Length: 133
Length: 133
Image (cartoon, rainbow over all chains, first blue to last red; front, side):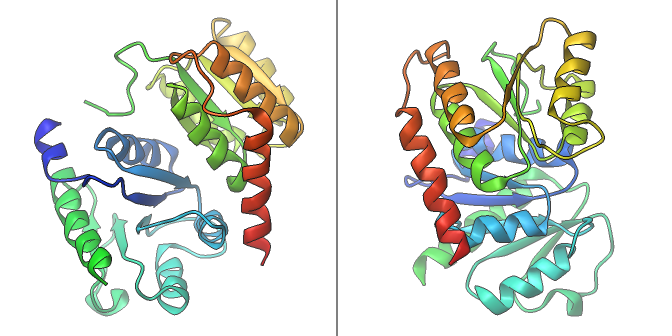
């Protein structure tokens, strides 16, 4: 865990929105990120995520599952966010093989089961880019 | 290690509330009080988490109108029957939920409240107003 922590969570805590309709997966990822110093918001579907994003909470990055019930899945949420908040980093996680053209430029998708180190390393990169904008 | 585990005996609260703009601030408040907080958006999610027994839950804090196969009352009854050691508290209104949260903080690991219940209510109202704009 210490090794992971050394690659993440800068001085100012970053705010991550985790969207997943599987509570075990959501709790596990949110718990990992909190241990590493991130401030984590949890949404059980895309609608909850959009409600949270429409309020005045700061979110630096969205990590969303792709296969979700509700009015839109993770790809729908990605498309919506690309239209409304194009600079907000979005990371996808999925059990499916997605084609690059489903994702769009700059969107990285992690195939489950993924190594947390890989996700955290990517988070560092996208958050650094986001901050420098 | 699952970072959501409460292996260090930090008391854990399963917060069950469908309304993300109420659940998120209350969860943040309880985390500031030192609790391990697990968020569930439906009573079904809550039951799934409780049955996994990982992390172990000490307190279930449920909004009465949470959707799912059980309503808040039924979830409370089922939890008390199956896991009598788990303390269950129900809240029917935002004001009551904020009061419950501040009361829990009185007995929480940090023995201090980050702020009083009215400030928590005001924060939730501001988020709701912001989301409606």
